[in-house]
Length: 391
Figure (cartoon, helix red, strand yellow):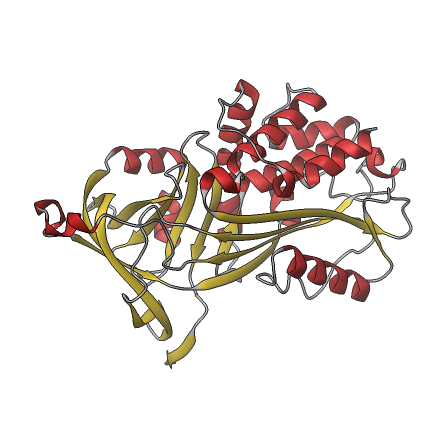
């Protein structure tokens, strides 16, 4: 029955294990379209002056929208497909394509990177949900239930998704994730010390900084005053790309430059060379309610109580998408694959470029096969001890 398909898609990233096979044309297209959605969503969120750190997984957002599309009927479903630029796909094609994509990019065994993904659909007790879904009687119960589920599903890495549930009378999609990059070449665990991270010119955090020198794809954009660094992950199936201004400044200028075309231009100018990296050894937890941001991008009907038709979920037309909580924990540490120490006696490692990450930056995690963006975000204020705060 249809509800079983919805549950399968919701739990996909936890249960999937895929062989390293060629993606279908539909999955490849959805990877491309989810990457485009990533930039639109990031820019919409960055406009919110109250938002500091941003951490979103475009492929997980796309799979969540797939759930909403399958739960919707008529114009509610077609509008979700429009946001995904998948108008021409049938429901079964959308489901199969997203399932294939998520299976490919989230297979921890072949990628040697920690990425825990759990998704759940919650709804009010007034609506008859299938047994697989959780009914919520009140806001307090909703908050406790969501946070307990997220903490358990991420091994305690994400203790809190939300302090409040606005509009608890609708359906809520919850994404809870924990991502820990496993570097292609590890940092030496003894090359870690205490340093400062400048949030602003008057506010500084004390953090741990890890250091290593190696051969990396690197570009110095002198015109735009930007460094770009590509650090391979796991077995090189994915890369973490760091984009950082030359010096401390608000990220607005850099964010105006940030498009898919500009990213491709930067990556096309990369040179493999020696780079001395100093990287924060930090963890951050970020939770976003994407309902408003997705509405700004065209998802207006599913989030409107008067217009939404999600009757494929409940059998009734009085259900709408009241919240889409997207929460992630990110941990940057020294762990990775062993490196060949012989490189340090070669000429290749001489005169390295310095990549010293002591101020806000943007990052992306890119799957090198599907070209999907697994993450896009920024770190403005890492977890740490305040060591300077001047008015």
